[in-house]
Image 1 (cartoon, one colour):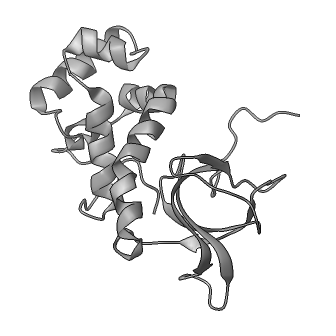
Image 2 (image 1 turned 120 degrees about the vertical axis):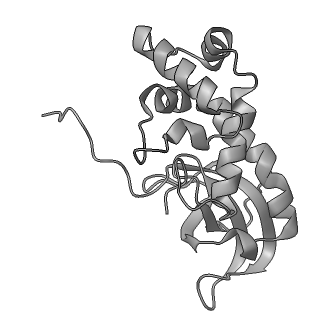
Image 3 (image 1 turned 90 degrees about the vertical axis):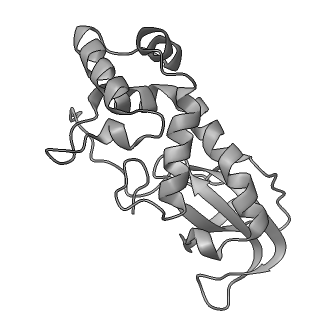
Length: 188
């Protein structure tokens, strides 16, 4: 029997590699060492510390499977990490990797924009995305009521908001680095 709505997963199936150390020590689990990978989860957008299978190789920006069944390169997900505690090279890769996630998951983010609601009587979720002020927000709400946005391009053409990928990525960066008080995309 299939249920219409499956509960949201509490873990990510995939993550993108930000940095790795083939002879590293875990900073989240005492006494664990080996191939320590810093990655960002594809859907929850949390920074994770991952233990690689010995002798497996990783590349920066690579999408790796970290789900529960049938991992090929990953022994375990050790824990969540704070942005401030990851290596400077992981920090410098983050923006590019986040933009790739926003690009690769277009339908998910477009759906978010189609369904975003006010957070408080005065603040709408859309306004918290850089580049979207009151005017774009109003236009977006009016347009999506006529017809849902189908893509970034559709949004761009109908509302005039340039570079939606960059704006969404910027918002995610603010959330990952802990600069924003409210999170739209990053799951705590």
